Length: 107
Image 1 (cartoon, rainbow, N blue to C red):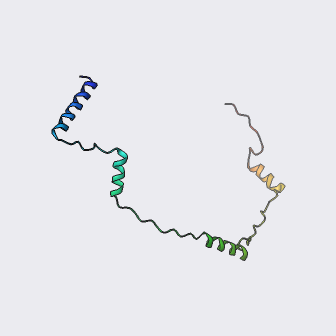
Image 2: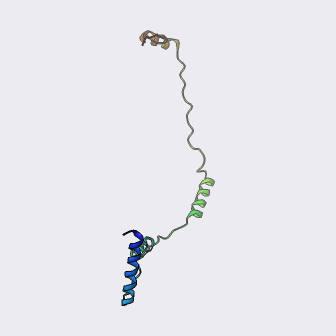
Image 3: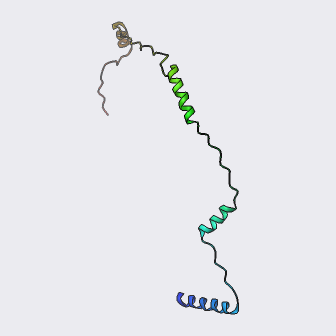
């Protein structure tokens, strides 16, 4: 029996049942309708009140700027630069045998 014959047989049996007085309710809901029903049964959360304080924050910011909160209080100290003395470079050259020398190495 192929698909067309099976479909025809089922349709004939459905028609026979309808003639006998049976009623066929709607078939299963589609997935979207089923999910909508489930969502409707779940308890819904309440919306939290939203306070819009942006105008107050803006006014506070302007007051801080006018009061001088935007000015720099601390100044960074100038970095200390040390100039190497000839004595310190000689001491390093004597203690470090390879300071300033390039050694060719074979690999």
